[in-house]
Length: 132
Image (tube, rainbow, N blue to C red; front, side, top):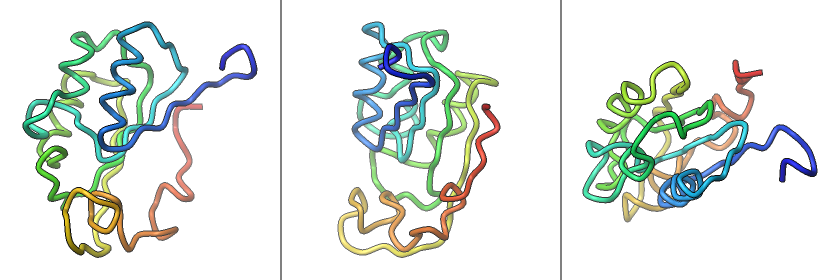
């Protein structure tokens, strides 16, 4: 992608955050990364986390984490964000969401995990990334 145009930014959500980490571990080098409702650290839940897949934070590009304070998905608990931020340090910026609605399975689009009820009320709809 970098051959077409820079910057290259990967956006990954939920289980896709694991896939993004696998790509980084195998040599992908995007300029920036956005992780939403991510499998971030061991504290996120019982699945393999981004931190565990990468092993070392040096493989992580400048990263924006967007997470809901009330995400009830057992794989992407909000308690996983702080350990991930500590592991990765200054290269990670965190944007927390709250409010919205939750219906049915807590790991789907219709729950806080999928930012249900947020639409463009979400701060990141108009968020100015400080990464420039």
